[in-house]
Amino acid sequence: MGRVPTMTPIRIAEIFGPTIQGEGVLIGEPTVFVRTGGCDYRCAWCDSLHAVESRFRHEWKPMSVEAIWDEVTALSRNKPLTVSLSGGNPAIQPLGPLIEHGRKDGYRFALETQGSVAQGWFSALDTLVLSPKPPSSAMDIDFDALAACIEA
Image 1 (cartoon, one colour):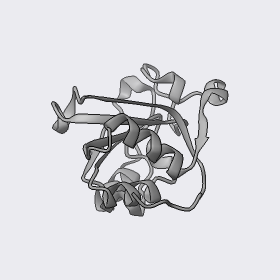
Image 2 (image 1 turned 135 degrees about the vertical axis):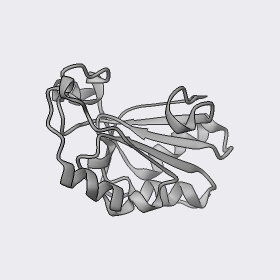
Image 3 (image 1 turned 135 degrees about the horizontal axis):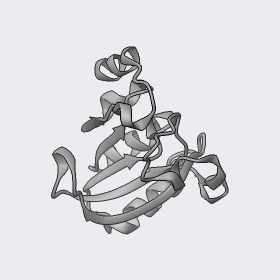
Image 4 (image 1 turned 120 degrees about the horizontal axis):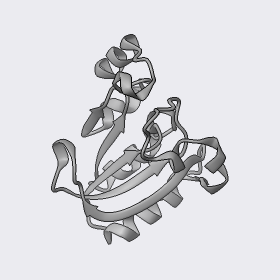
């Protein structure tokens, strides 16, 4: 594995696994989860408040790509598998360099987002899971932003 230069830190709420993906199109896949800290939504029924609300910000670790990758490869025992990027909203984090680095090592990447922010690096993902929030979330869907995510 090559080393990468330290870039803009990524706010991390937790990294765990490997576990078996239990939902969506990747159900049953061995997966390491990288849960980022911070979100641009405040859904009424959010199940990941520790990765969303700023009152938990002191628990989020600003990590370099290299530090995150060291944890992912230690957890996966250097065996390429799927890395699920979640949050909060991982699309508000600078994840392009992490994806680029991991793909060089043969890892696959999935990102789960509500589709409020499109990123150019979405095209480097193996799987993009868009989960627009329903009215019960008390949030409004920005359909233009969602369309931009699909086009990215």
